[in-house]
Image (cartoon, rainbow, N blue to C red; front, side, top):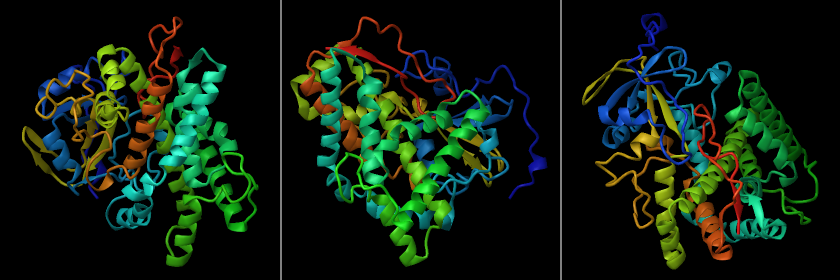
Length: 421
């Protein structure tokens, strides 16, 4: 571990762009990010507290560095970058998978991999389709106008992740609200309350499952063992193998709960907005639904809902264009990397014919998102069903400039999307 005193904070030079920045369009990078892409493969950016860190702006270097063990995800490291002020109080908080490295990370990931394999996720298609149909039915009955976020984009992945984990869907309003506080709260207090509320709820849920004292109704309202899910399986695995303890199980569940609905909800809603704003691309999808899988990949690239990945250097790392010194912070702005023209020709064009999985929207290397197959499945089913069943879908007259999530939110997108049909 480097001596922290050896790395005094850099002054905030005005020549360095601020990071992160607000988007003026939900599906386009902030205007100031264009300068970063021009500097590649490394650029300097300044954080809210005046600290200057490296931004990696080329995909070749990003892939190499994300796979380099000398760049750490350990948020307990004293030099790990904090991107926004409201997360200061959570600095040093160790989250399973996301903020651990080495043997501990391998142990945690090994326990989850079997549950997120291609075949296991493919078997969930009927359940995902039921969730999509149920919420779309309700939206159409209440129509002919709706907020697509509240009526469809958010409840679909919330239902799916509840069903998958074995979390009562009756509690969805609570954990969605606490997730909003944690990921998009305006103050450090809201962030802290969001984290504490989620962890308290999930600890109690683990306790109830261990004691067998759960309600008798499932997330869809049916009787029986519908609350049984991945969390139950992880608890059984832990008991057999001496694996995760109660606190780690609750933290894993929180991570999956947040990632399993927040990011997918933003991608569904913002993806629909992007398609409505690009009528030729939307028409191509309606004419040929076989393009849906490639459209999902293109939307993941184009939207870059997860704004950035963060690391800290444990040793000096040479990169074409400079040296990242031990103790320096490194950010990987996905909105820049996913528009690298050396990898994606015409990167600023939305093209549903572009069959390209080389984006970094799920990260890269050992920390690549475990839930990517589930996210792809949900996006495909939601988009295919929405376009097939609502052919007249369009933005409502009340839809002015869509409200973007703030730049310091962990996931980028729209907070509401008025539509009609």
